[in-house]
Figure (cartoon, rainbow, N blue to C red):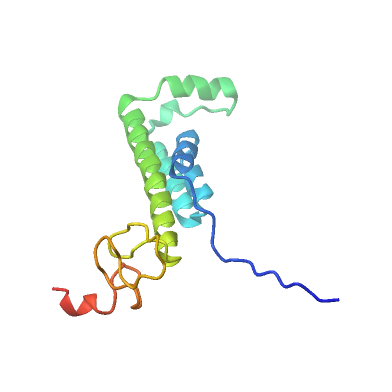
Length: 155
């Protein structure tokens, strides 16, 4: 009998930016949970609650936490608080979308399927340069997408 060894690739599945944005619409930070960005999730939830607690007048905070009391208090929220929360939630949705796009782009560049300089797809693995921007691909690529040769000409 022979044993078969299976190798597992270490690539993560690409995250869908629209799913991250839709989850953030449902609840702030939920899109970042989908992206597994735990620190950013905590930051957004803390920021939303801090803004609400700082801007909400103390007389509008319900004494009891029943559904009716919370619904009544939410109808009496001042416009400036509502606009601040709406603005933060909008930025949260955009941030989740952008973070998903960046994660996908970094993953594609790290796997060698995209050019680190211009971001175009590389279809021919035999080429040593990008057919879109003529960047040499056989050098080491830094996190910012530059190669060792690029640093010689940076100003």
